[in-house]
Image 1 (tube, rainbow, N blue to C red):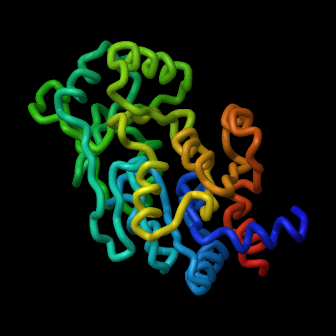
Image 2 (tube, one colour; image 1 turned 180 degrees about the vertical axis):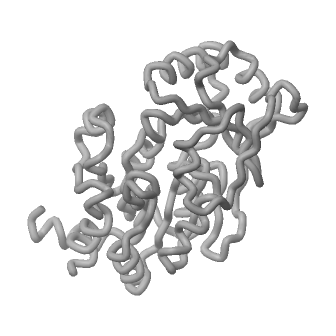
Image 3 (cartoon, one colour; image 1 turned 135 degrees about the vertical axis):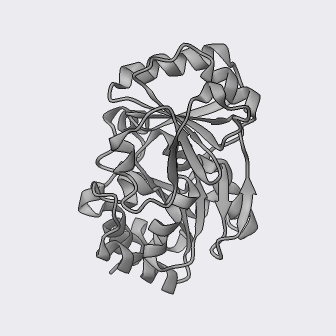
Length: 277
């Protein structure tokens, strides 16, 4: 990047937005000390900070608390917004009948199904890989038979399987039977998520920007998953992580690819291009 472009970028950007898994977090699902230092300097220089994740807010809050800076938290891909004071600003659930209609489909029993509820996540089977995402369990799993539940209202419906192709088949099956009802995203190749059609990270971020009197042109964002796509495309500067799937890099080929999450790509880019330190 030329010196002139660096100066323009630094002057324009007022808001820093980052995904968590595969972006701000390393492969051990942790935030490095260097990343913490960089984000504390962002706060010291009065940048507005937003973390936008597919994680549930009870899961994400203790993680972002490690940054030790005030920030807005967008969770469940936009279904919840919390203020820097941890006040709930926005909340949107999927209706019970809509969820029931999805779960009544002939879903491959090998697929793990999860309902994100307000204080618990309910699942049809224990999944070791999912539990690795919570080093400290703040958002508890509960094994259930979905057929026995009367109320299936949820923040989102989550499916996981090691074979991406199985989730592709399930996605197509759900969309075929529920035209126009849901938005969906692959937060990771093995994680398929369905939300209400009005829910998206970019929509939630727009609400925060309006509240704080900023616009997307003043934002820089970092992400690695398909649930980051609209956020990255909407931002004044969208950066794709080096560890993102090639299919996402190809789809967003007009955007710059930076270092991986394990190489502290977010923090190093901010330090070099925004903070110039």
